[in-house]
Every structure is written in C-alpha cells, then in structure tokens.
Amino acid sequence: MNFPKEGTPLIRVAQNDEGSSLSWIFKWTPVELLVVLHTVAIVALAPVQTFYVIDETAKKHGQKHIIRHAEKSCYPGNTTNTSHINDTSSIIQKESAEIIMYLGFCSTFASVIPIFLLGYLSDFFGRRIMYIISICGTMFKELILLLTVLLRLPIWVLYIGQIGFAFTGTFSGSMVQIFATVSDITPPGKKRAFRITVVQATGMLTAAITHYGMGYWIWTERFSEPITMTLAISLLTIFLSVFILRKSSEHDSQPKSLLGPLKLYIRDTPQHRRRKLLLCLLVFLLSSSCLQGKLEYQTLFLMHKPICWNEFNIQVMHAIQTTVNTICVVGIVRLFLKFTEDVMVLIIASISGIASMLILSFSVNSWMVYLHVIFGFVSISVFPVMRAMMSRVVDPQEQGFLFASIAGLDELQAAVSGVVYGKMYTGSVDWFPGFIFLIMAAMFSVALGGSLILYKWLKGDNSDRI
Image 1 (cartoon, rainbow, N blue to C red):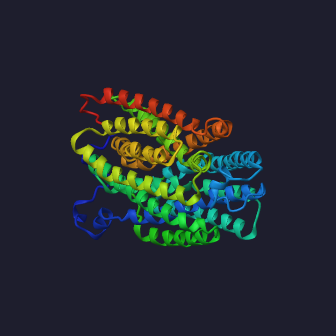
Image 2: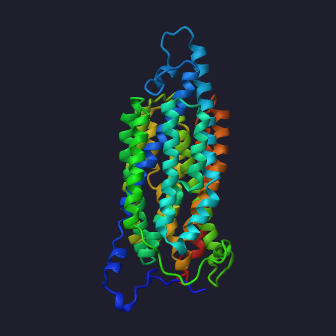
Image 3: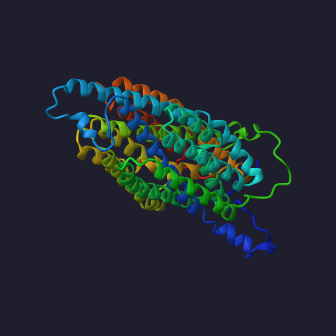
C-alpha cells in the first residue's frame, strides 16, 4: 500500500489541467455553505423534539406550559400539595428521560451500517449522491415530527421518523461526505487540520445562533413552525449540493468488497500505524461519549431542582457554550498548532473536559453552570484535530471509509452510552442528578491516559507523524 506523503494533495490534477476551471472548483468548494444549512435544520429540529416530548409528558401528568414555567415545578410557592408536585416533577423527569433515551438509541444504533456503507460507496460513486441520501433521511424525520405535532399523534410515532433518519446515515452520515470532500481538496498536514477545524467551527457557530433563535421560538410552544422551516432548508440543501459537491476522484474499477477497506485497521506498517490509528479512535470515541452524552441529558438536568431553568435559559446557555467552543476551535487550536504538535492539543482537551464535567456534576446554581462552560472550552477541539491526524495516513480511496468508520463507530458508542447514561440518570435523579457527569469526568480521564500514551509513541518519531 502506498501511503500519501506530507503535503501531497489527494486530488492529483494532470499537468494539462493545471489552472483549469475544474481545478479551481475543487480548490474552492464551498462545503461550509452546506454545513450551515444542514446544521440549522438539525439543531433546530433536536430541541423541538426534545421539548415536545417533555411538554407532552408533563401534560399527561396535569402540568401545562412546563416549558415556560419549569421553576414552578421545582418551587411551587405556597401550594399545600408541595410533596405531590415534587413527586410529579421527578416522574416527568424519569419518563421524559426514558423516551429521549430510546429515541436516541433508534437513530444511533440503526445508523451504524448505513454510515459505513454510504462512506464506502462514496469513494467510488462520489460524495454528492450519498450526501443527498442523508438529507432525504432528515426530511423524512421532519415530516414525521410535523405530522405528529399537527395531528396530535401518539409519541411512539416519532420512532418511525428516527428509524428512517437512521437508515440514511443521520447527520453523521452527511458529515462523512463533507469531511471526505475536505480531505479530497486539501493537502494532508496542518492545512487539512485547519480546514477541517474551519468546517466544524462553521457548524458550531451556526448551532450557537440557531440555539439562541430556537429559545425564543420554542418558548411560544408553536412547534409546527420551526419544523416547517427545517423542511424548507433541507430542500434548499439538496438543491445546492448538486452544484457544490463533486466526485472525489476517478476510479477505473467498481468496488469489489464492502469488507475490503477494513484492512485500514487490520494491516500494519513498519511504523506501527495500526496501533496509533486504534488508539486515536479510542480517544475519539471516549471523548465523544462524554460530550454527546452531556448534551442529551443536560436539558433535563438544568430543568430539575436545584437549578430549575426554563427552556429559554437553557437555549441561551447552549448558545453561549457553542459560541465559546467555536472561538476555541478556530482561534486556540490554530494557535496551538503553530507552536506544538496536535497530540498536545488532545491532552489539553482531555484535561479541559475533566474539569468541566466535575464542575457541572456538582452545580447547584447558575454561576456554576456557566463556569463549567469556561473550563470546558478546549474539550471540543478533540474532534477536528483527531480527524485530521487520522486522515493523513490513509490512501485517497480510503478517505470516505475512514470518516465513515469514525462516524459509524461513534454512532454505535452513542447508542450504547446513551442507554447507559439514561439508566444512570433515571436511577440517580432523586439523590444526585449530576452523577452521570461525574462518570463522564472519569471517562475523560481514560481519554487523557490514551492521549499521553499516544504522545509517548509519537515523541521523536518523525517518520510517521500521525
């Protein structure tokens, strides 16, 4: 196997094609525009579904407008039936957590194979068609959620939308095509690391603005309006992807075996590439399980006593958290990469994650919640740095499978960890609501150990700087 060397572009333009319009298009492919549009749709859709589930669960137990007035469920004032209200609040928390947990499990576990398949096939048939398939799955989920809200269908109908969303790769499947396209059009090394960082930062900044806007919109409890907006955005995304995305490269043969690219993690090199790839993957998955798991149950945690935030406060906090993370990913990571190796960024990110989770687990007031955002601002940088590190050492024909394997395994761990965290939260919400964040701090500690081992392996090894 011939591995790409540092500074060698994955797209090799023929001599007579240099300066051609095709070369210019590949060089300036505006994938960030697609990221912005799809991120708006996904980030807007997620809190709508979450708060709709919480709202419907609360109504079933006689509490209306809990989204606006979560404080009243925690502190009912002079109400004589205080113990009953507090018991009902705990029941709503547990039932909502169970529904959210299983909805997440449907979309994550069932999406693993589709993500692998779409990423693998995109290396042969192009990124465009596989990306459009993923967006169609988003539209299916949007339609199911819209029908559920308008027709007042039972909550279980949402599982149909989640499964359809999963079979087309979910949001991770679409991002596989985006990251693979970035690898196609940029040379390996720090340039690719920064371009992947810019792509992720673009999505994060878009998510921050969307979180803030949705805080106002969901407050009105008009759930059908934002869902309709996301449908229109998804249609526009499909239209623009036809003109923006191209094939990664030309291949003379058709794919022979779906299991063929697994040699990426099986075959080794004299520089021990396999163990480094596997350790990078382990650190990535451990960090992802913490950061994704926190987002799933942070909303319920903040609505519960003693913090008792309403929906608007939660969405504003998410917006601030995402904005701080964006500044870190674009600015701090870029600064670190000028003076140190990328593996050092991973070590700093793990330490940041540990501190953040510890503070959140013991948070009892608003200032502690915002303090955890400040301490955790570097933790998100593990994603772009790790993707860039791993993409440097694979062949052009394996880029799609690499990002598909990362995304697919990430969805698999999200399915497992989501259920585990959900059971932990429902079991500990009465006596220690922040217990799951304490467990996440322990997981980040394991990721820190893996980063330190990786640093030791790479220290002084200039032949295979992964």
